[in-house]
Image (spheres, rainbow, N blue to C red):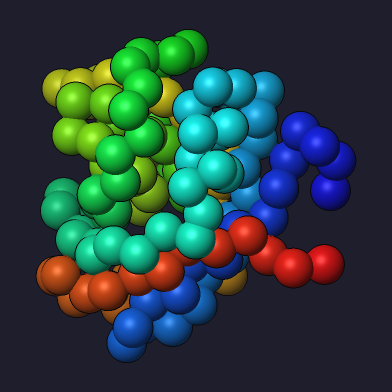
Length: 126
């Protein structure tokens, strides 16, 4: 992993552990603030194919877009939450700051998340 990309781990209380990669070049200020907040303790909610994890990074829109791909990891400034998508969306009703993606193997874990499940997000140790 270079300085531009970092591996993270999302530990869900019941569903298990998922892995992701954050890419600094997608939204440098957003990713930087996110990395400084780690480890993050929050809750996860699955709503309409998107997992929402409340996290206030105190940052606005940066390289924002309103379309996302499956497995994409992003920050939603309006909701102050990290999001993970299960499917492609061509037009969201809100804009997001792209941050990276979760691995293919993690989709199985993410599908088993229950509403309000506790989650811990941390940097993967080498």
